[in-house]
Image (cartoon, rainbow, N blue to C red; front, side, top):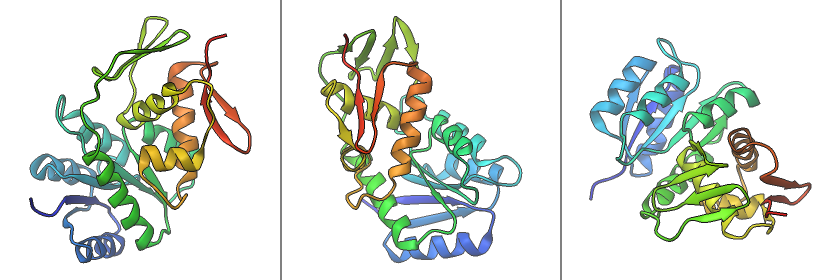
Length: 229
């Protein structure tokens, strides 16, 4: 097999060139686009293994690029998306994660951390087999690993792949508190504890979609799926 293919969609050419050069030096094959429409077309053409995507792009923004990239492979393997943003805005990030981004980094960022996150996201995709096993029920929430379907009180809940993996881990042991470090390691594959805000943002997204009373925060520790009373 050849080197993993990464699409970098970034309008700031200095940043795009630096990211591409570092990823190529690490052994990845890299393609670059500098605006939203070109990024969609590039991803459609090369079918990358991962996308590094800027949030603020000319033409169409990174959120719409992410929607289109994630939506054009129904039934196929969806590439993980690492979103870059110059704004440390939680609302933007929640929207980005809701449309399918797997992680985000705020500019300025270190090239070493970006490479580490790229490698972890690629490993996560490689080790994610088609899940087997029976459906799990926790209170009014039901999770079917085979179909990757979630319902709450019979209502279908549409989760991103990362949200589903996070919920699956929590649902495996209802009531057990997972630290952010454990969740980062088991869901994202991050072993150094970086990216804890990513966990918080994904949990907020889960709560918004599942409704109140399912995911419990243990302040200073982490999160648990609330078992039925």
